[in-house]
Length: 347
View (cartoon, rainbow, N blue to C red):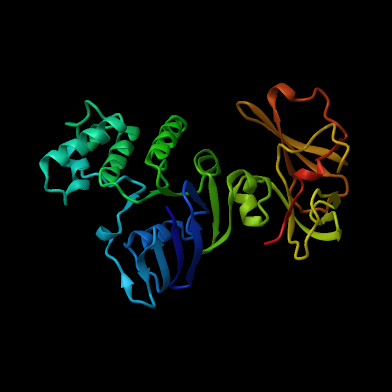
């Protein structure tokens, strides 16, 4: 299984320029609202047409501007789960699912495929219900069943949890992860949630203002985001403009301190980041005097805000996250961070 996407599209002042290849598994497209994530999926599905480029799925060209190839959506065998699931409100669960088999004329095959996906997605007993009678999770599974019954080569999920209450998301992420393993084909998942991307995706493509900044294995991206946009999207709260001061040293100009790094600092450094949970009271590396300015209590953590001694006026305080069971009785006069946890950022 493979997907090659290399497309460009001009939309007023916005320019989409996307280039990536998948080789199986789940690829998350992580980015802020309006960066072009959903539009990319629509181009792959054939709902929107790029200005130029090509899209190839499993060796079959779906779109090629030079060769004037543009297969209609129904011939692409691409399953697309919309944010709102797009179930037909006047149809039962069974009839919604059978819409995915509208081209199949063999009644026995239709019945067998319906039975298969109803069992797979745990919809037994819901077949006669209509969408307004379903929970959010049941509606999501019904929409997935309608897609999977047509045996797509590629499955695309557009913000699959955005229509759900927050208390449902954790359980349904676990269910969806199991379903995606059973699907076996390529999966693209659009999200603006770093947690969803981390839980479900083997690789993540970071998207910002219409272009992909990086495509990396998920854990590698969180360990080394490389760009300011990727650092922010993966949850880094502490980012300062920076300059290179040595092969393994950077100066955070907003914080007025220098840090050593684990990896050589490349030319073109733009900023430096330190995740809020990376600070350590016992770290011997990168330890600098601090003064504490505020704290906020969360259900399982404290967020402590601090400034470095000598930090320029008008700059933002830093965040330090502490699990409640590790909160010190007396805050230390200095905080450090291991060199491996100092993130040089280049874009």
